[in-house]
Image (tube, rainbow, N blue to C red; front, side, top):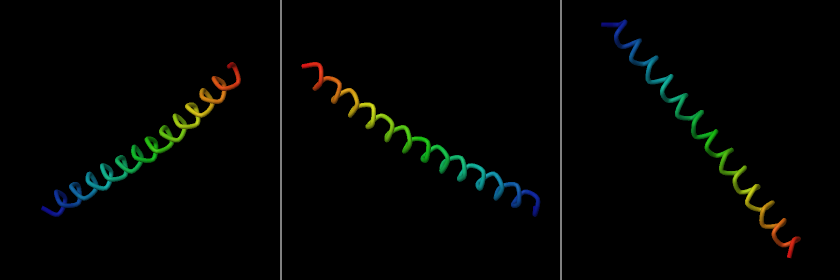
Length: 48
């Protein structure tokens, strides 16, 4: 039974770490999208 509880705790820790990793990647991607939107808006202003 101890091995089962240990394995379950390890699996949850890995899942939690993976979720945090995905949240961080998503945050970076949103920032990059906003930067690209600003660049596109600036280029559109300059071409008018």
